[in-house]
Length: 451
Ligand code: DTR
Ligand code: CA
Ligand code: ZN
Ligand code: ZN
Image 1: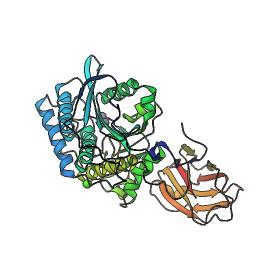
Image 2 (image 1 turned 120 degrees about the vertical axis):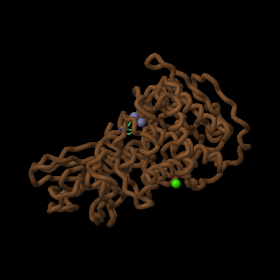
Image 3 (image 1 turned 30 degrees about the vertical axis):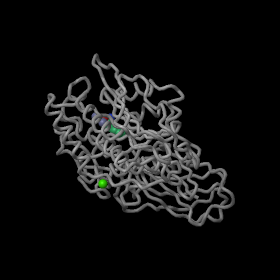
Image 4 (image 1 turned 90 degrees about the vertical axis):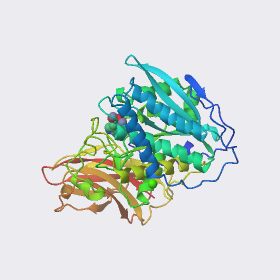
């Protein structure tokens, strides 16, 4: 559901709920086949204050990829659902987690006539009513080892979980990690898991973060545009390092976060791209090659350890850890100082036609707007020189953000600063976009106001 009314980033969403650390919850997933009691976990101590996440060593992540590659090679060339390579992959991951002090459980299901398995790993401690989850599908397609899709996400999540154990991190909230079976058959494992939870167990999950393809060779940096709190925490990691990101627009329904989103659980995640080709504008900001897929080995036999961009994998693994530390600390990273309202509804901009408008209704902001009102825009267009962009205040006065001109670049993804101090903040603001020349078209993807 896309909001037409501006949404304020929840200042007290569940993800920020201060949750007191407590004893280990009975947080094992339902439908267990076996619950393995881990080797004694370190004695839970008082919840620590929010510690910064450690750097996730790229070498450790790549070592897991090498193991997945070896497992595929030893089991018919793949790690697909129903094949021995999948269960061998799960046993590898489970062994690492059991040794690190996790409480692991293997959930069994049937799909396509074959037995499938999910692996769930709970880190002892934290508020059982405030669970922060990270997950990745562990299965490959049958045509190959599936190292980027999705050994990369599986290894990044595994190494984040191991870093929690290595550092003895004791967050206020309860940490849970998961590796899904049969995603490639249609999100089967994750949907089975969510369906196996009671409504109370679902309500305990404050957020689910999904990592599916995070090391694409011709990488882009995409952040899922779902829960705004999770999105902000993930996006902030990249912004702090000067790495531009884009919202992931094709993700809805395309990976395991959909199973959680469909159950009303806040979701987010990261993605470096699959079969779509990288545009010129994207190559300019991210490097790599325009006109070439983000991962030209998507679902192919060449998706091996050679099909990984180390920089992308390293960055996404570090961002994964940052998000899990931040969202589980109980206090979390405070939301942006300002109050942000956004509208993520797509609005088509007629080619060479009348202006299109996208509204945001602002409520609860006293007084006038600031002299540095931030207007974030994400407009997708194949020739941005065609575009004239205005911010229209509730009283109808227009502030020119961008004129048309000779600029053949794609998209307008930026933040404008407007002196709107003469305008009352509350009311319905509009982003007005007109395409003044024929040929080349686009749409408003999202926009926001921060007061
Ligand atoms: N469905 C995933 C790959 C994929 C394609 N688009 C997205 C968007 C967001 C996450 C993942 C994907 C797969 O083949 O496993
Ligand atoms: Ca790193
Ligand atoms: Zn896939
Ligand atoms: Zn995948």
